[in-house]
Image 1 (cartoon, one colour):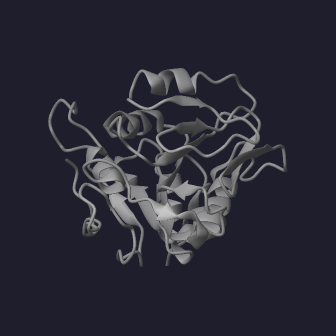
Image 2 (tube, rainbow, N blue to C red):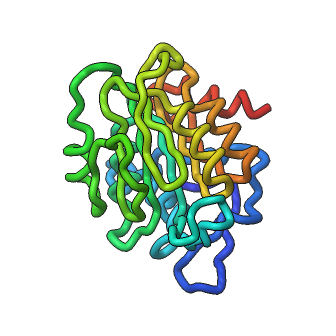
Length: 238
């Protein structure tokens, strides 16, 4: 497993469940892209997945704590930004999530208006259902939602929304709108992840996640194919 520059989450009373409360999140956690093994096969962010979901899945939280209808149970909300060079680490993250994972995972890759096969690629990598997000779809645990071409993906209370608002960092979809909306709605339940990519998308949103009590994870810039996004996420934190 790659090393992480922080302590692991504290275990709650429930076995195999994780609470993000009380973690040291003054700085983004910088995650190695590989174990350093010669062939690079046992890579990446399996330990990140363990950090996100423990041995099984994240602790649920009563929805009334985050202003959602009381009948709704909120699991961890994981938001991931990737661009150039980010597909390989993204697939390793998805592959490491167990079938029993209760997190809801949202992925933005800078595809612009181009046709995307990302859900199909991620399905071959992991154990959870993956699909393009649809406007108005409910947020379900154990599901992976991918921002479709030319639409920003944002979150409301237990709901996914798509829009064609102005491009952010010259792109649509962009990560900052997703990250910021997740932070506002779900607060400390959010884990934000910035992987390889150009420009600085995700940095401002990651900072918002931290301010709202969530956790920030950043791929090591020196191990990213395109280090600009992770480097900017680290620099904007200072």
